[in-house]
Length: 282
Ligand SMILES: O=c1ccn([C@@H]2O[C@H](COP(=O)(O)O)[C@@H](O)[C@H]2O)c(=O)[nH]1
Image (cartoon, rainbow, N blue to C red; front, side, top):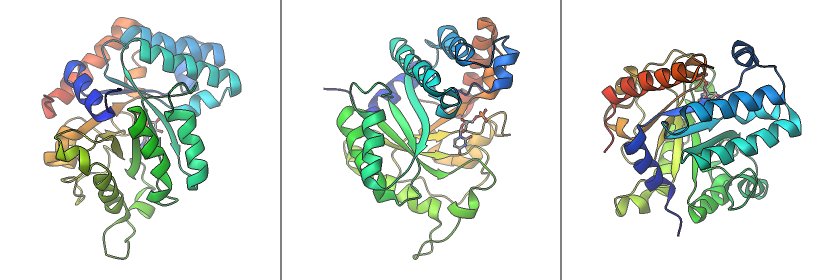
């Protein structure tokens, strides 16, 4: 039977360090790497990155938008990137931020979380803003197949609080209500001392927060480091005692060190050291 996502993530983070490298092939990055802004350039960028650092990083997060830009050719590259990540033993979190009515969400789940699906990843990002319950099919399928779902809770962008800080009927902010829903889905894993398979996305940029992560028992994917202004040192302030759950994610800051493989490895090493000073995984 496949190992549950939470266990796989814990094991690999302990081995390689808790770092997620985002694969965000922005056109200016392709140009800076001396590559054409085409599906061929995209492929050399993404697969060259994995060749350089794939065996040293626990988690990669391909950003689907940059692959979709090139249509079916870009999606074909994404399929090969997901296969490469599997081959180097890294965890893939496909950043697709899907969210829809339940019946359609089930189809997205079949596309990304079912065994044998061409675009199957180890986890996806999902949006709960059609209601947390609409994600139930994806969360259930992920549990069955040893995969994960990261639910947007408190995002890194400045517009996020307009929705995520609004109050629900009992006075909690929406972001906290999402954290609490995720905690409920992870409660059974908590009882057996394992990390649950439902994670959340919380930006490194949100600053000091009253959010309560104490019952979460799931991975906290934390984008916003580097290019958006978040720092590894700031993680302690944002997450306090929950920082053991944090999976910091960095895209442009690391990618801009390429294409030289040794420079990419140095950028990864630097990020891992800075994160290691704040988070000890065991
Ligand atoms: O709250 C969120 C959720 C997702 N993202 C995504 O992460 C990367 C960030 O890239 P950087 O270059 O490290 O800024 C990107 O794919 C976003 O779509 C996020 O930034 N914030």
